[in-house]
Length: 329
Image (cartoon, rainbow, N blue to C red):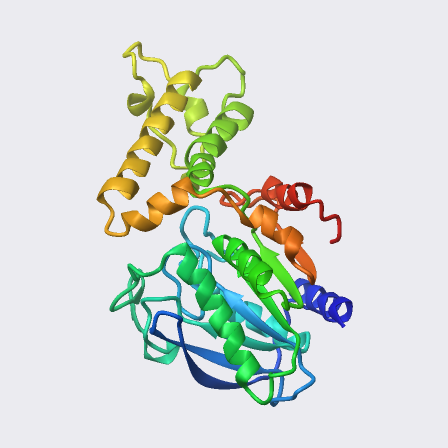
């Protein structure tokens, strides 16, 4: 059954076609007593033979539709317009024959129909919860699974977990703990702790662009013409920002120092000044245990990684099977 549904899912993800649905609002309670709202969707009507999947968010604020702006660096859609990622994934899973459960991350208490939209996106009353620790987010995904198993129409259905970015770590750890998850779908997987990931996103990838594309004459110095080769979403620094020794030249070594200084400032603010610093400190120190957890997942694992993903690059996906010894697709 796992092979059949994964094959159907992959075809639907590639085709991008929508599917008819029946949908209802639901609520379930977390282990520490919070009520999370969500929706459960069916391909046409509730059927006991449908497999079920829980969609799990990436890092940061996210409602049950996983609204993304579409025009920000690293989160740019093909049209530049906002996208509702979990609505798109819902449709793909529905077409493949799955029942789909998606829910608001901690801190969100509204159904999408009640959300007020501002110029920069949704206006949230409480966009992030201080209780949104990694451990609690893993527990929340397992409570969603438990909710499915208590419903007559999904009590005997095989349950899958699908996560994006940080959600790939969450569902991997959750599946290893549960022991009965039928399979995982990992979209833009992560295989490093938060400090390593942020270093890649804020230092390494910009240096790679500068060395391999911007510095066209490969002399280690970026001229004004070469600096103009940075794309807007690559946060191009000015010559003045980079010229740390005041010699009027923008050297790659100075760019690296400039980026590292910005990275250190970001880490300091997250770990010392941010209202949710306890969460960040934990994530900075955490060894990515999910690299080992994936070896304990009994079901199939589908890895989907974008070759041009600037947030979670392709090598992230290669670390997981190599670390765990898994060679299955």
